[in-house]
Length: 173
Image (cartoon, rainbow, N blue to C red; front, top):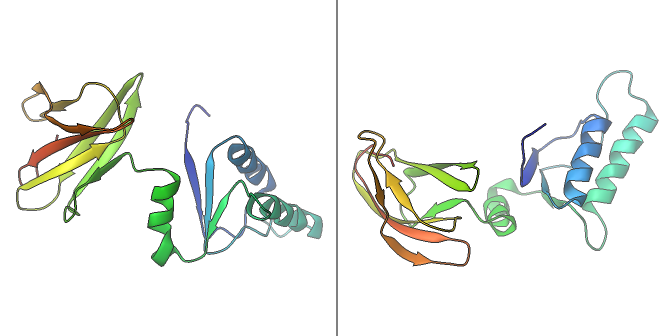
């Protein structure tokens, strides 16, 4: 469809339709990041699937995940390696300084604008530095008042901007 993705994750998928897997192969060989966890797809779905159907799925898995330079990534141990490996493959759209696990972000793109919604789900105020995968001017919008103000930029990277955020308990921007 019209959706555009940078990364697709197959979490423990063992059974997959060939047409779906072929589309995922085109995605991965076209520059998208395809990740499988726990196990690789190896079976076609349904009671009527033949040995040839299953072999086709196994062959796509071999092409995607094996060889000297595979176009997709497999991580067997989700709990120990997945988070760091995903961050290395595609840096997060937003991240916060240490000890701010109660702050989360949603990210959307609208034309040339990168829009982030950040929320503090803790019952205490949080002062953090947040780094966003974005360029250009940064504004903070207050959803309660509708006011937008230029954000105080702490530092800029080539493709990132870091802001100091003061989020009241259960607050958002």
